[in-house]
Each structure stands twice: as structure tokens, then as C-alpha cells.
Image (cartoon, rainbow, N blue to C red; front, side, top):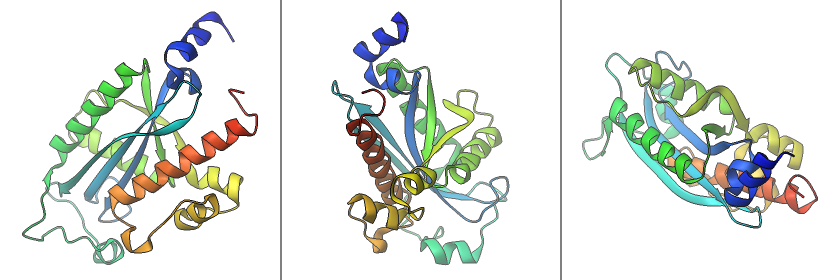
Length: 213
């Protein structure tokens, strides 16, 4: 480890742990599986922090319901799965562009405070969430997307390694994390549980003598 990396770990432990990347847990609830054509209905971002002992924990959460973009496709099967009614008169939602601008700004502010150079997306089956985040950014021409364009941490893979489970609810159960199936398929809840799972795996790895030992 060189001097710069040592100083990073001492002054900003999160930056030192993940090669100056700041992990942010993302969950999107959508109107289908096609990131280019299907609506994003909810998004949540959980920002993590690391204490002086190298323990990872949840710091703050961003959550917003989203008004489908003009011409967005919404599959009825997706709505039945999530239980989201995008047309409910009491649903408090904002336009997609405004939501992602606000989320990106919050992530960039956290990056600066932690001396991180870029955010890296953490998700359960991360490729899905990453695709929708990138599609929204491209759709609205957002120039300051803080996330790495293709790298991510996938808790489905990590949980498969650590606990032999790849389904979020089962992985949480194996990790000793409370999981309420009635609350699932909300971006806020799923992001919270994914964040708890990621922190548990990272912290357990450290306790077992993994880096940084």
C-alpha cells in the first residue's frame, strides 16, 4: 500500500476501503424490464458511511416516487408484482428528471464529504438497477451522473458466496436480518434491506480477517 492510500484510509476510511469509490445502494421499482422503454416508478438510494474501526453502516436515504416519463411503457404484470398504482390520485410523485437530478446531487455531496472520487452502485441483481439509472440519465441528458458507468457491487452474488442464497429475503434471513415480505417491492424497503445485507457481508469479511485486516 502506498502513502496516498494509507492517508486515504486514515482520513477518509470509506474512500480507502473501496479504491476511492463510494458505494451507494440503489433500488428501482419499474413498469417492466426494459430500461430504455419502461417507466421508473420509484427510486431509493442509501448512502453508506464507515467509522474509524472500518465498520460500514447506513448514513442517509433518498427516496422518491416518480411520474412516468412521456411515452413510457408500463406492464400490468409489473404493477401486480410491485403493488404500485402510478395513477393513484394521492400518490405524491415528481418528474423523473427532477428526481434524478436531486438524487445525483445528494450523492455528489456525500462523495465530497468522504473524499471519494466516484460512486459505485450496489444493488440486488445490480445490473437491472444500473441499467435503469443509466437510461434515465441518458434520457434527460444529465451530465453529472456520479456513478461508475458499468462497474457495480451485486449483493445477489455476494450473498450467494457468503450465505448460499441469492434471493434477497432468503439472504437476509441467512444473515440474521429481519425481512418483512409484506413490505417488499417498495424501493425504499428493498434498498434498506440490500444496504443492511451489503454492510453485514463487508463487516463480516473484516471480522474474519479480510481486508483491511
